[in-house]
Image: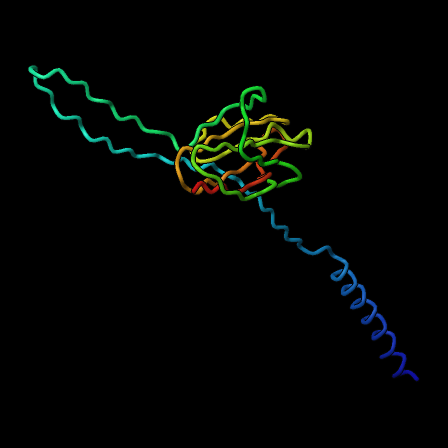
Length: 178
């Protein structure tokens, strides 16, 4: 019995200490990895190059007037006036999307972009399309776009960066002029 007592008690103490150590290690909080993705939309600035051929030189003997070539913009944007403007089609910006988000029109026709039910507290939405440089729409804004040339025009409505607001895409779509 003497040999058993000498072996049993140290083994019990040893297992108790090992149990404490394992329990402590298991109970330590682990390293937590969090991935934060902040998407920042930066409007693309497109430089347009227009070639203008020089007018022929005019001699003093012949009085002639030469018309000057002026570049026609791809589209014209203005604030919607219901008394004057009759848009061909309408796109509503509502519930984090454009409805419809794709449409086709002919040159010379107009599209009404209308903000409907925009959530408050997110800042004033910005409309970005090509070289359009006055993006503020307002929370219930309406603009009319007249397309002068054929092409595919992608547009975005972005919630701008503000105090506590990360820039976010609110709506996007495509207008095809054919």
